[in-house]
Length: 199
Figure 1 (cartoon, rainbow, N blue to C red):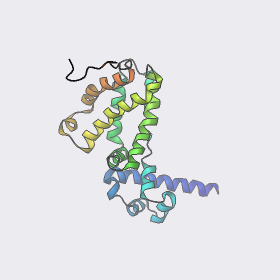
Figure 2: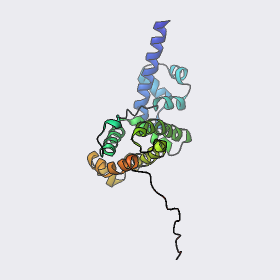
Figure 3: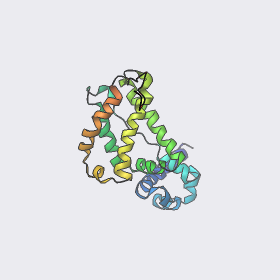
Figure 4: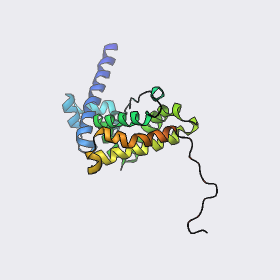
């Protein structure tokens, strides 16, 4: 029985490894259960047995650990640079995450999965840095707007100025903004905002 469970676990991991490669290289729509099964050298029914359908397989393949560094050990003023550099490396190396980002633009389930990744992992990483820990979720969301925006512009929309930047240049531009989102005191709002056109 133990040997059977081990064999099943190994088969599942092999399917996931192949699926990540296919989703990263071909995208969701062009990837098929049959092509994954062929590359994994198993029958397509085995993929269905472990994951049910392509949607569930993609969800499992895109359950990604961002492997965020311990930001509490980073020197003051360098947190934004460290985090930005980490994400640029992640975008460059983790094709499945990019496949998830592309799907998230039009698929509600993929969007929810991307939100979950950022809401749980990023919020947990930045919470110790926030002057007010209660604002961790809000600050993590602001960080996400920057990091996801860079990924969208660089890897999905292929905006020439962003594509042409080397990683260090992106870090130099974006790092200070990330640092401000994470460590600045709370933004103050004007209790009596002046209306446009008022005297």
